[in-house]
Length: 250
Image (cartoon, rainbow, N blue to C red; front, side, top):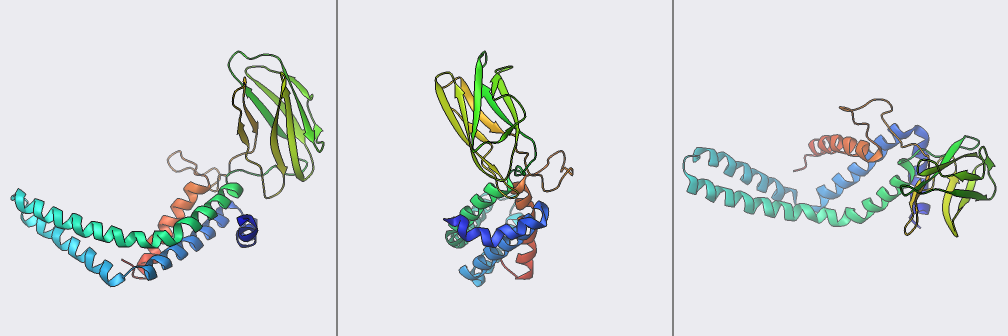
């Protein structure tokens, strides 16, 4: 249901590339959250509370050799901070559910690279330690197999290489006396979740080798290459700081 609402809003941005689309989405969402915060809180009261807390903190330093007065000021600061937090939570009630819905859309479109038409990809079946035998894969509608339909389990896994045209497919795995299914999407802008965990079987997981999206490409931050969520958090923190300063928000 939400896909039909969010696709026309966010899907066109994906054509800009992952980095720029996440940057723009981060700015839009941060701007909305910031404006909601500004107008859903009493900014005069919020600024007053912050000023009072700073005043108490400054006074604490004067009485650092007097533990009783330090404790008294700490209690006042905690009281003011609790009141500040209570008022700060009000805007969250308006934005929490919409943001969760948008995050669900982002997770479904920005976590992995889609499998493109006519590009080779792999399907993997993972097994418990010591499992042996054969497993057969069939696809509806048919795809081009670049390996045999039936694979022998080797090193606790079986691997198939395939390619095909744009469309929605169903993978059917036959192992032992059971059949297991997994969805596959070949598309320029969408994908099925790559991993499916299997319970109560020697077969433990079915996977499609979609690569994870790395918006910064080969650039790493102290060895960390953030995905869409990490990139969103970085951008949103920067935008939030700038917008709060610009809009004089406490």
